[in-house]
Length: 264
Image 1 (cartoon, rainbow, N blue to C red):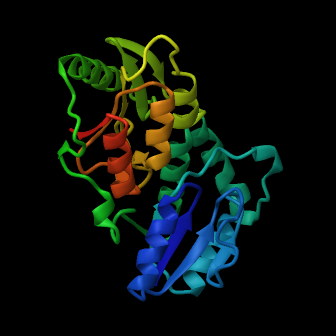
Image 2 (tube, rainbow, N blue to C red):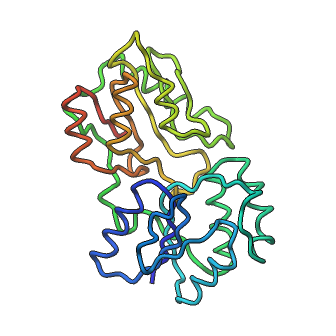
């Protein structure tokens, strides 16, 4: 039995498809905003503050391993439903939340570990969603693009150790925006340029001190389309440290729109 602790984004859906195809016993702890897995008979809709309920569900089903996938947003702590264990653990979650959404996940992992529940890699059942080093589009970065990529990577590498930004947009060797609380979508929306079209790059690398079992940078067709609207020429992600959804559709879109997809 594997416990699937799911948030938002399409990544959990891909994992669930594979789990069902392989006929693996599972249960879902649904932490998504819209409770998107409510129609699955093996799904339990819970609040992030109901730690007692989460732990009891896992233990009652003899579930000693879990996978985290999808985005778990910072909750409104004043409106959280808390059970007894939630009251005990919530101060730790609040402290972690000040460091970003990924820190919340890391704290939940620590709590589960205390209860002898092990966290597996999110890509355990879907290694095909993890791209290796190489260029995946017909278009390759030119000299100007490579300078933008280098600037972006250096920018992410030089962020403070407690900064939880995964992405940065660079155009003409200048940092346009660094990913903030609003995530990649908001960053790309605010990076739109009327003057420059098909210039600049989005680089998404894991956060510093990130637990690579969870919350890997995720790229999909939606990201490519948003990057195109922003006027960017390409996307760069890190080898074996990414989740790449809709691979064929993304490559076709990139080729059609003369964009590049590069894995460093």
